[in-house]
Image (cartoon, rainbow, N blue to C red; front, side, top):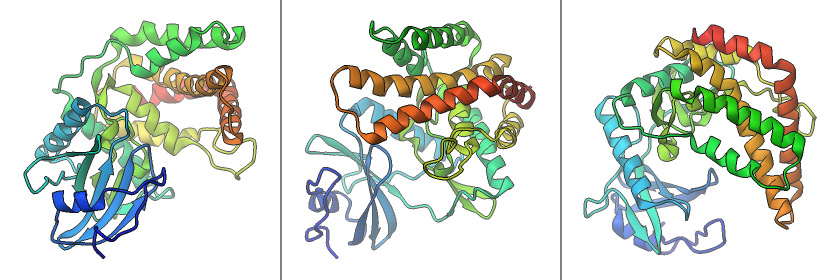
Length: 331
């Protein structure tokens, strides 16, 4: 199979620039290429003469300086012994390329098995590797006054058409998080520390993926992302409680493993539940505001709003338990 003849379309149904990509990254000759439907970016799995590689086209809003910073981070992490993906340069030595106004990056494939939900070792490994990552990036510049998610929530509740009860709840969360900000350490967070970000050889992590969301933020944001991903309880698709509750034993396992790597600040234990709540509010308000602006929401949009409502209700009912879990594990 050659890149020039491969009839491959992107998510919009437009042809992908395979001939241009094959010219920039020959890689010993392309053999096969297939799309991977994950995330906001376009991902392709490429088998070539010198192995398996992954091509990523950044989403349209991605600024070049942000991309450059993330590629520099990946190189720095590898230099410090962290299993970040290896960026493959073009034939001219560049670490990224622009085609039709979009940024492309190629990384070398990492052989490994995915996260095993039933493995306590894998669960602890997420916390451990996240702690190791935070230790390695602790000396990198990470100046941010306010977390982007908190700033976005402020904007979404500033609209005059937000209901008074929802506004009052969001204002309280924003106020409590704002009061904690001076005590929350900043780092260049991973931004997407989830199960799918790890590759394993047995119980050993051999690859940490998805660094395209890395940015300066409060360190505890990574913990909030991680515990929500591995902690949410799956029941049955369509059930009211599907992906609503958090398994606090799993939350404890991740946080305990993290705490063994990093000395945490007391404010982080308080901020973590608030960040979970802020995320739920931000997502629900985002879709609700789109509807107020006249956009026709899909059935999936309405289902997502309902899901976030159910998650907020669960947080209300289990707030004391969740806070106590965070305090014990991060003490």
